[in-house]
Amino acid sequence: MKTREKIIDTALQLFNEQGTKAVSTNHIAAHAGISPGNLYYHFRNKEDIIRAIFEHMDAYGVEQYRRILNTYQPGTVEALEQTFIMIQEYNWRYRFFKRELTSLIMNDPLLKKRFHATNRQMQDMIRFTIDGGIAIGSIKPMNTATKEHFVNAIWLIALFWLNFLELGGEDVNETTLRRGNDVLRTVLCQYLTDDTCE
Image (cartoon, rainbow, N blue to C red; front, side):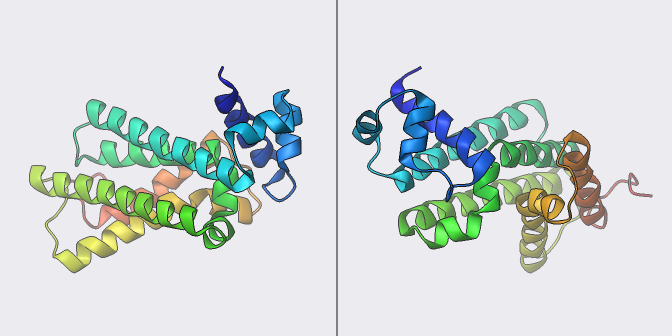
């Protein structure tokens, strides 16, 4: 593994375990088995490392979404549910970022700009799936305003389900992460054309 990737992987592990405030660049270097100077050759500071992790997050999310589209027909309930599962697994993989989302992006203008672009991209993916569902008849037609509310509702559940579990004192595991699909289906039901909700 290249040194840069080792730094990113080590930082991700430490941030997930301890949070970003408790972890310094010296901690990351020590755990990665390199000198602080070697770390600074690749990254100027901790914020630079967090931005690099976010770039990894972004690329990983897009790759996983493409895999879903290659397996499930866009617009089907299965595609939406698999996308939700993927997002929750993604959220757990990068859980420090989910836990500290607001403070991280509010304290770093560059990261904030990058996150906003990804946020729009994720909502575009949901919108694409809904449009596909309307096209194949699995989702009822809706006006533009209703569709945007629908996109927002799905994205809110997907984005904050992990936070909901942790704040409620629940264990985060495969069962509780996937329970979010039941919540998602409840939101979906009023817009589905089949009788799977009855």
